[in-house]
Length: 200
Image 1 (cartoon, helix red, strand yellow):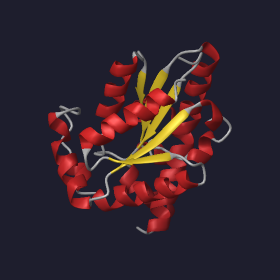
Image 2 (cartoon, one colour):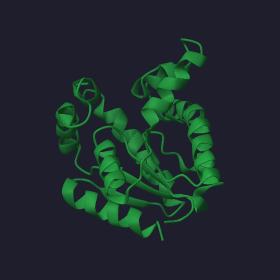
Image 3 (tube, helix red, strand yellow):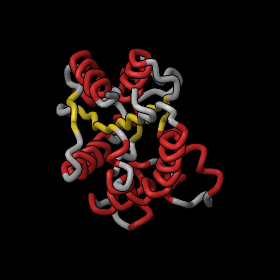
């Protein structure tokens, strides 16, 4: 294994990034797995109640006016800036300390990590089918988020998929690998192999 190995996996809720991150960690013997949701949650007390970071990402457009695609992405990026300052620092510390780590995050905005992209392994996970995406969100309570029903999230599927599209397009400029988890088991094995290849 490299002296430092960071695997950054992006994706919106319901695509399987939490369960796949855990699987990769077990298979590769990586002991540190961090969720972008928990990074955001830890930051919230340090910001005013009405700050964008204290909103659900699918409602973040409200900080910029009307409910438009442009304002949704503005809200997502604004939240991402704050979360990714912390995410960036965590990755820098792990690189300096030589600590292998996996971070899974909704806030996959490659521009926020461009200075360390060459030092980390990154991929983006998505689901091509909207109907399957809704189904997975509604099922996630059975597998990973046991006290967090996905119905609230699936009701906002259109906004999540707009964020997904933005992150996919943003990844293109960096040559980041993208994996469709329509076939969950197949995607899981492909991402594991991709992560393993990045370790040597």
